[in-house]
Length: 114
Length: 114
Image (tube, rainbow over all chains, first blue to last red):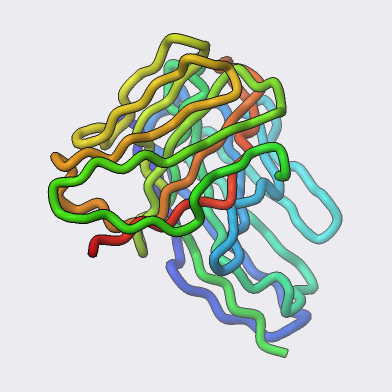
C-alpha cells in the first residue's frame, strides 16, 4: 500500500532563511499532494497542494515541487518568519483516487528563531 | 474552518466504557473522515464516509465504530475494545469523495484514560 516518508522530523532555521521539507511516496498512482500546517493544539490547515499534472506551484512565500519520476515532493518556505513555526505534514492521495483518502507523512516540526 | 465542529474538546474514558465523539459540518460536504493523531506518527485514518448511510474502514479501524445517518454528522465511537485510546482525534470533510478534494479539519477532541 501507499507509504509516505517525511524528512526531516525537526528543522530549525534563523528568521529570514529558507526552509525545505521533503516527502517521498511509494505508489506511482498517487495524484494529489497537499501540505498542512498545524500549530500547537490546533487543527491542521491546508497551506498548499499540487496535482500530478503540475511540477511546481507557488503561493507567496510558499512553493511546492513535485518529481513524479522520483516520487518525491517538497515544500519550500522562503523568508521564514517566527509565525511559520509549526508542525508541517505532507500527504499523498491513496489509490484508488475516487475515495479521497490521504496518507500522511510523520510531520516536521519547524522552529524559526527570531 | 468554522464549518466543522467537534465536541467535546476534552474527553475522559473509564475502563470498559464506550465514548462517542461528535463531528458536525455545515459545509454541505459529501465526504467525512476520522483520523487519530499520536505524537511523531502523523495522522492515521480510522474511518471515512463518501456518502450518507455508507462508510468504510480506514487503516486503524479496530476498536472504533461510526455511523453516517445524516450528511452533516459523522460520530465516532471509541469502544472498550480499543485498548490504547489516548490520542488526539480529528474529523475532516471534503466536497466529495472524488479525487483532488482538499480536506478541511475540525479542532479535534483529546481523549484520555481515567
